[in-house]
Image (cartoon, rainbow, N blue to C red):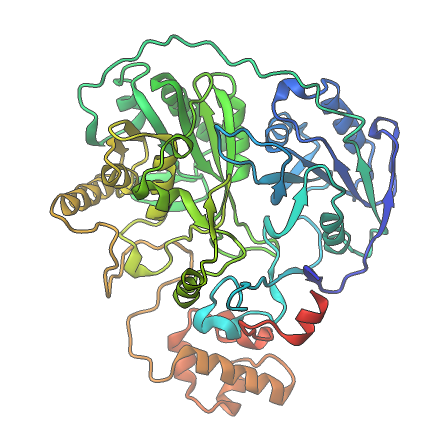
Length: 571
């Protein structure tokens, strides 16, 4: 059993073999369309866009519409979405493909798009994905450390990256259907209607014709530079066709607080601004080289709409980078949308075998855990537990602990940039980042013996980057852990607690709340804790950010890292 849904009324699955062009579904349902996995947009039947639009237009106002296809068609369809179809979600599903382009990253995910005709939040059940277990140590593949009491015994809340199932491109998606009939098992729905359209809308097998660009390469005067100022202004001074790799992690326009930058401007102005610096990146990138943009899927769809007019689509890399669990389908899908100027060159990892960069472009297979003891045991047993990365990245984790962070709210993990630069460049080539922040990109480039240009608007962040580069020159690891480090900026909206001595650890206090819940039959409030708790109420007031954190263990079952018997029987 891969998942568990609460208060579910499982939908009846109806397989409808007719062409969706001839179908009109007027009953509130979950409507699931399976399309071919198009390799390029030239291979998509021209009428398909209108057929899908008409199918949704004619559907019930309360229905949910799901579309399973390749990322290239998914992003193009979303970029042309009519105003009365509402994009809700892009779920990346681990997928095995029959063939792969050996000159590029191995394709490892398909796109499950979710749309509605209604506005507002997507309606679905509360669903959990079961834990997965390492075949060597039999523990959960993720190490939950001292927080096991805060997790459910069955699994974690569903996210928008599904790796605990594997869909095979040419097979019927039984596991996906099994999840969907419960995820949308609401009282208002009765059916999950499945329309397998892979035969009706086969790929036209047309080769992609790359855009034509001048092959002239220009040489930079200074290609090891940290610049403090406006990125657009500086980009305009860079010669055409002079940069080997451009990476951008722009402000997401999500009301985050950056030094001297308003990350909450009018959306039209935001994308006009984005198009301006994207245009410059497209101009300065060398022929056959790559521009990579990190953003949330919804914004990458808009970046695609512009970039596809000036460059050639190369790849959609999914980073499973869970940040804050802000909804019942947790946002873990972050996209790296890659475009090249003409046909992209072979990726470095496939043409070189450099030991230094192998550690960034190889990873443990996702069914093995990362516990040091288990890794050592696998070495003794000669277990082959590594593989080259694909375009689904799951083992790069956000920097959440203060000891790993400097004073910036959205600092990328070093491994993220070391991997990207290893993939798309060779030694002595030039990497450019127009939003260099505190220098993760340029430091990674320097470590890998690449040249770099880092542009940063904030003088404060720019100066931090300069100091970190000087540390690197002096033989100090700029990515080292710094004990007792407390940055002034935060990477979450939760208020930081003052530094203090904990007379009783937080886990003990949370388990005491759980004991009280079992005694009085409800989640205790502050008055209940004063009456029933073994510990002073001041501990709860001072050691936790809010009452939700105080009662977190009481609102779930707790889990063990070992597979439970009932799970073993179900799985």
